[in-house]
Length: 162
Picture 1: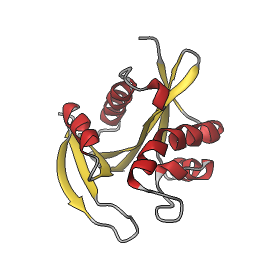
Picture 2: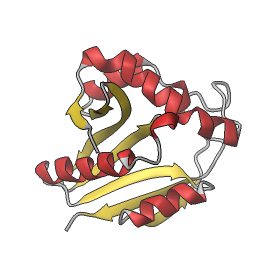
Picture 3: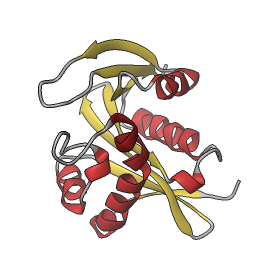
Picture 4: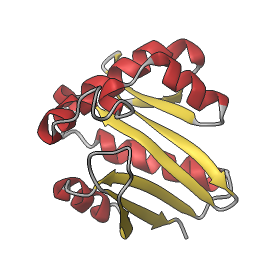
């Protein structure tokens, strides 16, 4: 499979936000998420969100295939030993090509370089097929929580990098 993964810069913010919005539209539709009831859902992502993330230390990576963006992911070191995987996004017409796996594997490699031994992610609790996919990649579900500002429950999953 011919692709490359590279770190993003601020100049990539608009294209990155568009990739994330496009990749998450189907999730928003499935769960009835709108800008009104869930304004911070990735389906509403804007370039300024990406720039603010970068300002606080999130590194975004883009996967390019055939000369175009196919997907992206963010990595944030939360504290020593712990990183968050953020906004994993693969464009709908690029799915089923193992790009999501490649991006997660890249995050694991970069997290190890940062001295992290655990990578964590939050997903919509009712998204059973996504949780199953993450389990295939070595993640385990650790807790499910309600948040007052979200119209869905969040399941947290983590993978040990040891």
